[in-house]
Image 1 (cartoon, rainbow, N blue to C red):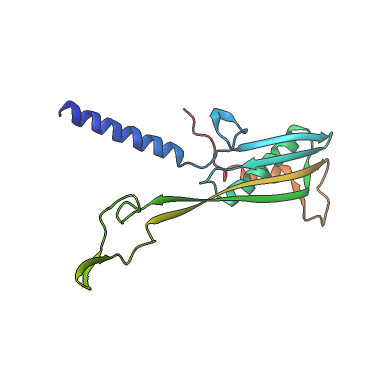
Image 2: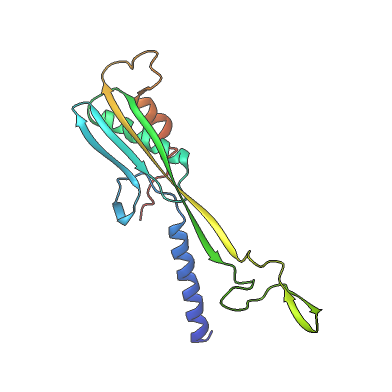
Length: 185
């Protein structure tokens, strides 16, 4: 193998690894770990009241974000010596952005690319017609979710009939294995 081919293969492999690293869901970990934007965060408001949040990246589903929020709320409850928690407020926000990229296979206002076109003779000269004119952009929608909740913690059995109350240990048992964990190195 020539040096040029080896270099090309190494560059392609490095690019594939870099893209693969970007295409993973936000793991269940504190926000800001390893320079990641997402993760969980909490703020104590009172002795038994916290504000909890979990933010995902563009490949983290809404379900994964909401499960991570509930799991962190349950773990926080147990860590502080409580048995159950109730959500006072809870919301999931979606941040939607649109990205456009030129399609390299059609004509662009900056110059010709390969693309189907038709020529026709009209009034003494040849003219071109491109049926795809104006459709030379790919549009991609990217969604990011962030879930927030204010929780109140309590001891003993959870309040009967309160649909916003959760048994912390039961939530940990049911959701602990379903969230995306960090990849150990």
